[in-house]
Image (tube, rainbow, N blue to C red; front, side):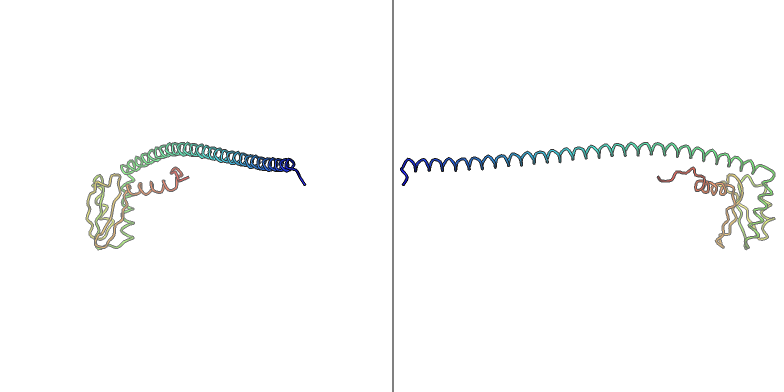
Length: 200
């Protein structure tokens, strides 16, 4: 049988062992919590850094896209201004040639041929022909071309030459003006010249 002192010694050793085990468990738990906290802090720092890098990339991309868009717009604006300038020069020259043709001796033969072609292509009960005021001297060609009653009117809107033949009762109008021919060529030119900018 153990003496009291031996019992006390056993109890003291048991208490010390329990305290050591508990202290070791507490230290181990604290170490795990510290490692977990450090790991969480590192993961959060990595997430924050990744977010900042991603934001910086997006900011750079936005700035680059804006700069490219601005440069493209400026380039397209300059091209558009140049193409409009070329088109304006071309059509001013074409209009000047049509005006010169209108004042030439060949114009009367051209007008007669066009009046005759329209008269032979269509049968009218009567017809109204609108001419440029500058073509008053050629009014007689209208009566020669049409075998039906022909009324001649003068239209200031016809600036270059040619004529408009119409019979509103029959719902017919034929625009043979040089002004109209020039505008139709303008539409064709913009559609086919390659000088008109298309969307990129």
